[in-house]
Length: 148
Picture 1 (tube, rainbow, N blue to C red):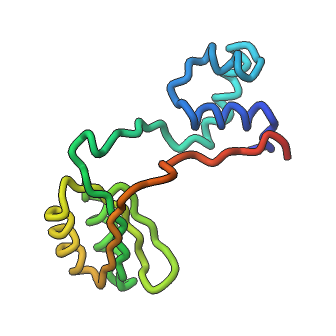
Picture 2: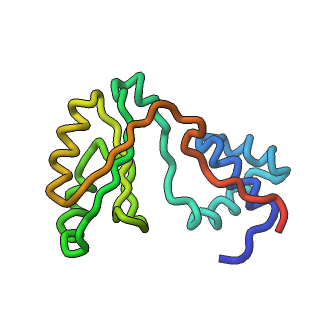
């Protein structure tokens, strides 16, 4: 992909703020016609991994969010990855550096369900869990600078 210009960056920033923004509104905000904006969106589509609604987990009954550190033996990864991908309460799973090899973000209705999940996870290795009390920065995109 060629280098992003100021308008490309602005389009991507606006989409990160509101993926449902109407093409006409997006075009107005970047001072282009709708067809020109549409053409840019087509070209930029390879940088967009998907569109997703952010849900209010607490209102949906998921009152406990936690981060679980898990030490997985490298030989167990072929079994672990399909397992973790199939767990609906897993919001994110990252392979990380440090004493633990995985950092898993989960959401559960209660600590009882979280505890049950951790007990299952421990077949893969040692865990350490942090329960989230509050979140000062919600998940967000990365602000692309307007200029190089």
